[in-house]
Length: 502
Figure 1 (cartoon, rainbow, N blue to C red):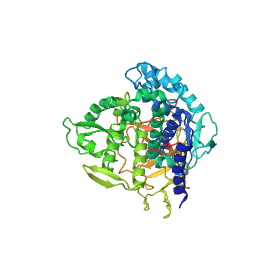
Figure 2: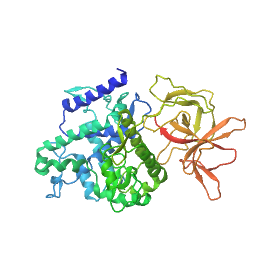
Figure 3: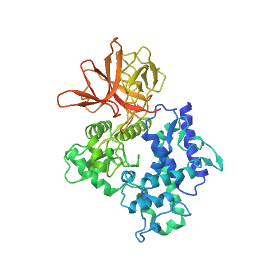
Figure 4: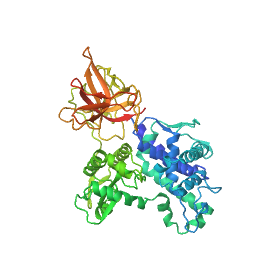
């Protein structure tokens, strides 16, 4: 048995022990376990055995999102805090109290909360709960610290998952979330205060963890319009039987992401159920929701749902990677399925750049990495491809091919701004641009190449904007840097696919 397989078995055994041997006086540990699992599939992972650093601020925001529905009155017979389910046997959780206050102030979702003056106090409550409660107690099993997931460093800023643990969370996400939620549910049901409110318990799980059906009605007209009233799956006209489908099923990733919705016939939606859609549907989803209509979906749905194209893509890549590893079946059409296909292992290399090496016994796809090429996030800088190394391809970023993808470092600060800043030293995943496959570069971030006065190649990273007179502007994310007008001496070398923060 290899080391990765043994670690996966150890991981499952540890989660089982954690839920049976841990001391759960409240629900916070279940929420933390859920939050860590979410973060592991929302952030790309460079290699299976890597550590993963998670900021406590990210976990605090996750707690707010996970507890949002818990802060709504469960009992219709009360209008104050007595109608709220408790998360422990004692006084009401501070997080629940502050979230209830937010909702009384007509704050309807997390995005609105972040834009309000109540976010700071809510965040502080979540952070205090996190640090004083589950963060350094989650891994106390049978009264002993067993730090299998992450070291108990008592850091006030972050935790670092041990090597290989993030990969285990990605591999067994469904199982971890299922176990955490069911244990959470049982804990809430066991609290005496809650038993008087719950009554018939069949509705409790839907109340705490279900889909917001009212919000889905906001998505329906947007999706119908951008799909021209055509069912996403069967590609036939929809005639009043329209439903909003979670493309990555809600049962697999229980968060509403705005870019994850499609409009479909009721029959198609009900038949697809909790299956992942076939690869042909996946490619259409990426083109429709991320490439062509990504900005429009963000504009129209961000008031109701969390909208992040990169996160939606990462979750999609994770889901299909797990499906391939598990030999799962993908839904093609009504009662029609196809096997999930594994990630392609490319062994034939014809690109004119130095040829990457892939050992026939290696299970990891490797990409060329050029340590001497610095992609300038500032002014043009020189570099050469005289040295090339081969490192494991990043996980969770879709199908990669060493003939067309490579890795290099960012240098400088001109792209350190905006929603997705690029910092000096970040690792960049890039895709060669060939003359026959360049396509439209409008709105993309690309590497531009030009020769300096001595004939050496220089590389600059910029976003591309085409202006009315047919010229192209090279725009930095940092406003301190001037806009550059492209000229005939410049060549597009590669398009930016992803930034991998080490």
